[in-house]
Length: 299
Image (cartoon, rainbow, N blue to C red):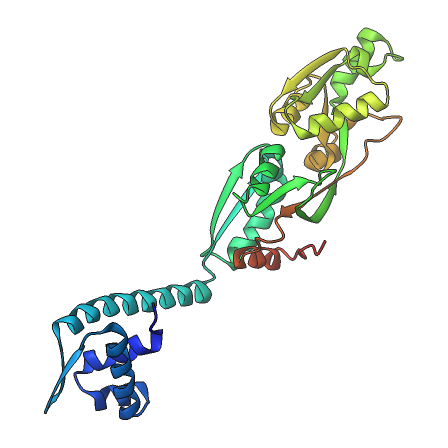
């Protein structure tokens, strides 16, 4: 398109007004400037767009055709401007978050509550899935944020930490008493007890397996479950010794519904935070970090 937008704007206003002087007042430019712009546009297109008469100007057939198209174009531009204004005024946007069921329930929900209260018009999509799947979707830029435990190799993603989590083993007092009654007070809990772990597809399970291997701990009886919630519930009813995240059972520990299993070497804490692509930071993401009072990573 050889002509610039201002020429079409002048043409549109003249056609709408049917008079050059009226269009000049509307556009705040001189009549000679309008006449010159129209002549230049006609010359570039190789057609006459107006016929002149005593009352003003009238569109030619070619002019009517061009007017219909410019009218549609300027209405679309106006609609786009209004939509952008609405997005700005109401903080409308779309935030896509990937997160595991466990981290969603225990960590993300409180953050979302504050965010929604401050930005009620932003659309939120939650992809409830494994951490591995979340990382893959981040790398493919199919989601904006991922709430994950910090991976050992997170390039090219940025990572903003929000808290540390501690993996622990817990059981009920009655389960331990019955186990000691059956096996004796000196029994090795991991050899004689029923050990409750997440299944091998889970990133937490891989982390715990590394800990067990490094410390030469070989559980003899394993019960694998798919979710942390189910694992906690199994431990609470006395099915065995569960490996859980301490923060998620703090209430049960405080009330002595569950007790900690002492370990010779504590499991190293992990860092949980939001991962995202450095080149894909949207306004919705900036609003999210602002609302939850978490600083975005710069490295």
